[in-house]
Image (cartoon, rainbow, N blue to C red; front, side, top):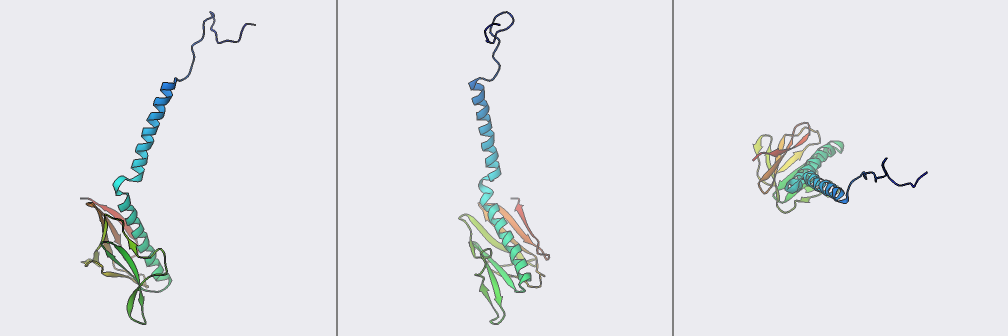
Length: 171
């Protein structure tokens, strides 16, 4: 038996199979570029803060409408350019008081560059900082809120069945 070397039938070295270091580095660079592009697309670029705040606001409204029914209490929401606040109706004093016992419904200040406005309630335009009720009966009027960031707009719509939908507004 002869030496254990990779030789062909005629004693020459057999060609080495595999990838060179340059080929492996090129493949790694392509994977890194593709991963970076996918991460940027997933993160959402400049619209991420706007979409995040719209989703947070929509979730808070949906939760508040359910809480109003569960606890049989009238709640309300008001929105101005800087953020939103939830309110509870005190029947004894016949007044709206800021809601302070629930972290989800705590007053929220929006990040710089993001603005919020209540656009309509029950089909009518409403001024800023109008308190929109969320009734204990669960029968609420439809409302529309608009979040804006550098000309990009997202609409948050509620309906009488307490469903909340977030929709991008085309320019």
